[in-house]
Length: 217
Image 1: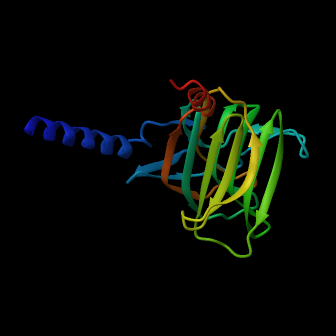
Image 2: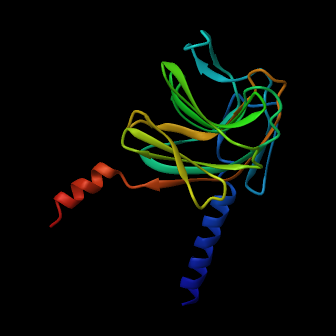
Image 3: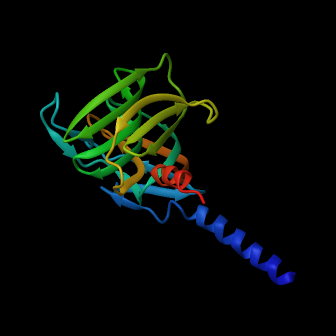
């Protein structure tokens, strides 16, 4: 019995340690000059004059903002709590799902003309941009994305309880995706962004579940 109890404690310890190290195991694309991970929270000083955008409307392509990610295959749910001291027009912080430089989704809060906007940019060769303007500033927001088959549903929440969908976008299925934390300061000199409670939850493959139902013994 002691052996089983000890084994269980060791297993729980390894699980907790794994959660504690989840951010440390991730990697940078466009690492900023200053950043810190403490208590499973990432704080970054966002690189000035940096962004992700491709071609449409503005006529330029940029791919140089900080992005801290891990790679996931299949279907999943990801969420994070985001706060920041936005300063300049287009300062933004949130999450990104990225296949490559021509296929990605970035979403979060974007500061435009003195107002907070729930913002999503979907890029497939060229970028589009959708926004929901908030009536007043918020200290933080929760962003959640659910990848199912070839679609990603994006939600926001102010309390991590009630989530409201803000976008449903196409993203190639059966393709590994870099999932993580992104911030950019296209017009500004940078700012500080904080990411808490980042979590990715595996979802069983929907097509496989349907196959299993049809082929039960």
